[in-house]
Amino acid sequence: MRLENVLALTYGELVNSPFVSSFTNVVFDIKDVKRGDLFLAFNEEDIESAVFNGAYGIIFSRATQISDTEIAWIKVSSLEDALRRLLRFRLIDKEIIVYKTNEIVLKLALQVITQNNFIAIDGDIREIAKVLWDVESGTSVLFCPTLHTKDLFTKVIELSQKSFTHVDIVEQTLFETSFIYDNIFYERQQLSPFFIPYLEILLNLFKNNSIPYRLRKFTPIDHFEAVFTNRNFEIREFGTSDKVLIFERMSSLMEPEVLFLQREARWAKIIYLIPIYEKSLLEIFTEENRVILYNNENEIVNLLRAESFNFALIIGVTKDILQKPLFNQRELSLFDF
Image: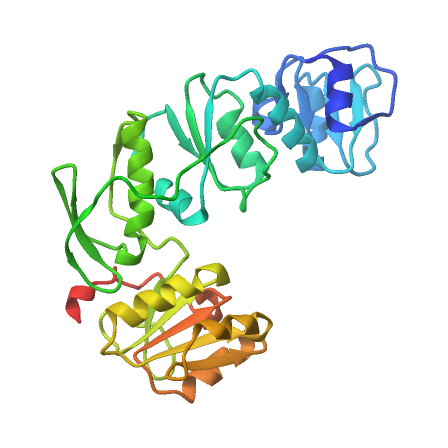
């Protein structure tokens, strides 16, 4: 890549007059630096090593001492933004098929084993760049625009939210499902029936594009996540308590989750906690629903202590409010109900 292209793409300022005019590759991991590379210095302490290893250019964002005037020193306002622009430019010539979807479908895709011709991307721009920088032509890429920049790709196909692929549910409880798909029986998956329509969207993508895959045991995906507690709200193993806290950080998922609980757990006493800044969400509830507004997450546990319930759907926070590691939890077996 030529120096003038790098400056144009990154909106960078060349702070010296180097002898070099082009770079072999763009790297941001010090272990990968070779002679002729352009190094993005996310870690300023790596600059000296990058120069020693033969880097022809350094992109930096903070005041940095120039140690070699023969190479290019480029200052940018944001290293993340610079890398994003460089990656976008590199992907223009790649013959990849990019699909955008919602966060739940993406989180499910990250737990499915696929071959190299399908990549579900997540993480910060450095993690994404590691995966996509040398991506092969013909690869299908799945991303969620609410988690990542929308302008990373020039051409995007919106993944249909309509389900065409049918998953046959054999047995289900609130947070666990046994199902058959494509003549394979998946027993007691830690996947709530609430997520099955999202799984069908993903499976439909695989089927329509002949993408080989293999489902494995699912783990919690940071949505509609159930945690068993005792009366003191200390974490207990799944199935050993009659109090279940269900955490959902995205208010946009509250309405379908409320409808799911009201349909599938009619026997249970359910309460709902929502942040006061989401007060407009109250309109989806009826007078029969017990809805509690909270001002900040520090008061949630005390509000729960004052209530009697089987399930509490808590919107806007994660299980981290319980301030206790969850490593000792067994996978939820709702067949125990």
